[in-house]
Image 1 (cartoon, helix red, strand yellow):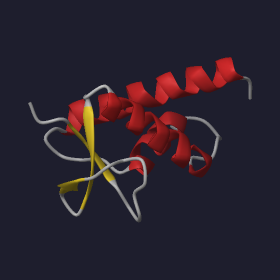
Image 2 (tube, helix red, strand yellow):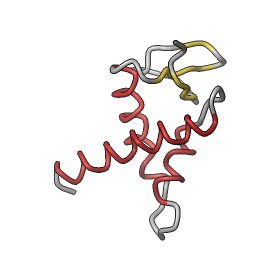
Image 3 (cartoon, one colour):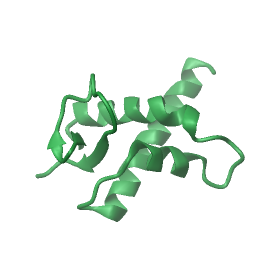
Image 4 (spheres, one colour):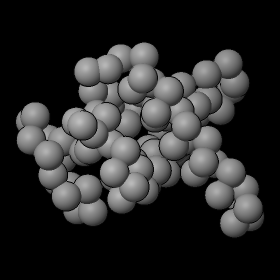
Length: 91
């Protein structure tokens, strides 16, 4: 995959995360929800997208658009240990 393709994938995953959250607000999503949604309607596997989804979530956190949580508490998304959830930033 070229870096341009990676950039396109990252942008697509960021949009997917925000779209899912807009539909589910104020609820959270699992990164796997975004990975599955990104490949919906294709034969592509979703599991390889898990780390790219987490990367996209970190970029959205850096821009203040979402928060990453564990057990309902906001965490630093750079080094989570275990399952995470993503939610829109409370404004």
